[in-house]
Image (tube, rainbow, N blue to C red; front, side, top):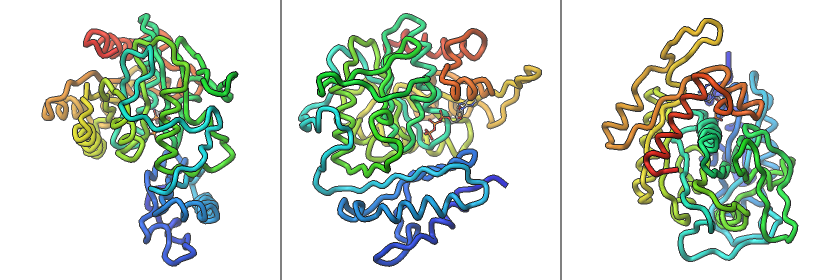
Length: 354
Ligand SMILES: Nc1ncnc2c1ncn2[C@@H]1O[C@H](COP(=O)(O)OP(=O)(O)OP(=O)(O)O)[C@@H](O)[C@H]1O
């Protein structure tokens, strides 16, 4: 039996807090995702002071979840709202002063945020492949991984190592497959749990946008964390976003969450430039047989209902995952899978979005 969210929550309910109650009854678990045995969640403390004292609780939570049958890996991040801004864990250049107006790196024409209501719908897969497809079409593309809770973009783009900063101020991004790449995950020590406080998070994002030498770009694609939390809010409020692309699978439950993401962007006055259906059509790698495993047409119908452009369908195929795991996005190659991303990229260019 694969491990479920409920299994994980039951385990977390056994993690007591020094001042009474447990992680679940005190409603401290956020962004819980369980994918093929990989469990990720955020522990949100009420304030920065408590978060600083909660590292033993985080360690206990990781240990207890690791013991749940079927769990392969556990990643838990401590976070808190409010509190005084502390020295950032991103050592390069210190904390930039908060900017008054919306931020847009000099030389970057457009910033597109890629969001989703829930995790695991393929947001990072779409971001990386779209970036590569646009680069193949001659666009100058940057890719920023703002997913602090589970940065997967470096792996999917095949980049690793800490970006250099020869002068201690400007961070040099990495380059892969014709795309300029930067990830918050590359700047923090993977062995250390990061306590992201609201102001720190803002500082880190500002650093990613303002201190990275992005160069001249037609479009910067920002891969958001799933859901509708702090990072999304911050980014939409503080950045001069051209707009947002929302990725969903055709399932009703994913669509419900996509609707929440669309509502959030609307509230923040970030234009939703379109919906993308991922894992739309399953193509059997053995025989080429096509099937709609998660239903079909749900995202297009939802887009029509909401009056938002529908940007395209992307097939579900084993090669997409393998290519992502290998750091060589499938859009780099030839064939129907690469063609689907090429069509999506062409549509964005034609619409003046990239
Ligand atoms: N079209 C597809 N066909 C096959 N596998 C896919 C497809 N899209 C995504 N995947 C796989 O599904 C998993 C989740 O995808 P991905 O990490 O892109 O999702 P995500 O929405 O960014 O998740 P999270 O928000 O949790 O970071 C990955 O293993 C990825 O390779």
